[in-house]
Amino acid sequence: MPKPGELAVVIPVGPDDTAWCGLMPLLAGMPAATHVVLSMAAGDAQSTAMAAPSVQVIYGPAGRGRQQNAGAAATTQPWLWFLHADSRFDASALRAIERLADEPALAYFNLHFHDGGAAMRVNACGAWLRSHVLRLPFGDQGLLLPRVVFNQLGGFAEQLAGGEDHALVWAARRARVPLRPLRAQLSTSARKYNEQGWWQTTAKHLRLTWSQARQFSAAQR
Image (cartoon, rainbow, N blue to C red; front, top):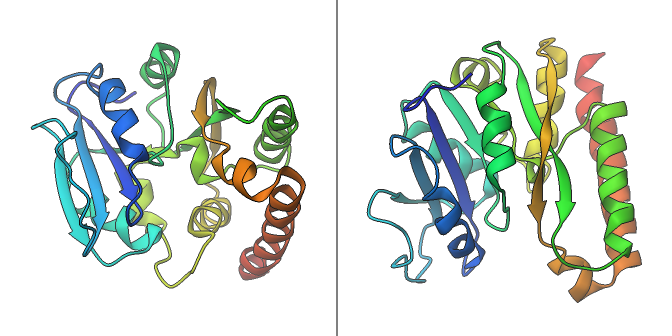
């Protein structure tokens, strides 16, 4: 398991996305030696005053894959935890990390939505089935893995306009890296579902998941 000082938390931040501010108080409760990196898009003019002095802020070309790779490269810790800006966690998630076996595996959390109402429970159940049964966890489930495995997989695919997390999971499957569910949940926002409509957004994500799975799995044949 990651020992104090062995974990780096990488948070990619899209242009003008301030959701990361809600993560700062939660990260303050982690061991002091944890290296936290906010990987911002170049040219993003938003203030980072909400970031604690111990948080490293870097800027680079926009794109979640590029920003996550840049954040990982800015650290030296042997474990990497990739968190989305709107992710939220509690003490149970930290305990799950502490219990994680020291093995070359890719770990992930169960997904929960902290807003959006009853309909989002359907999506949370779908994420559980997708990750536990189909073995396809996504980035909003807080991918956590040893740096040596991340490097072995080649990091996130920077040329993709989306689905870089999906591609990394398929790369792990090709390399026979075990996928390990953690017995804790990570909470995320249902903002897009609320803004764009539950059915439209759910259907869009299903189509994207199917098309990306066909694309990324083809490399296995």
